[in-house]
Image (cartoon, rainbow, N blue to C red; front, side, top):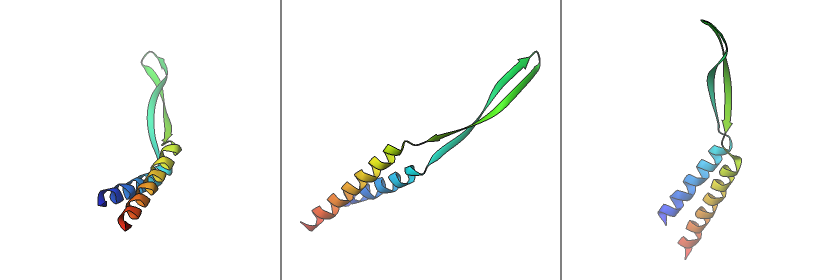
Length: 74
């Protein structure tokens, strides 16, 4: 019971965090190279965690939490 309750809480927290999480990184690309002279450009890219993953984790966590609470009453 306790492990189901804990797993439900962890899934709810992970789902809520993943709904607003975005990962940003910067890459440096060579744009132009003429002999020893090179021109580079920094490009910032943002990758968002798929929203469906957050909702599935949140819903699954709520189901596990409800199961843990309801099975404890019996």
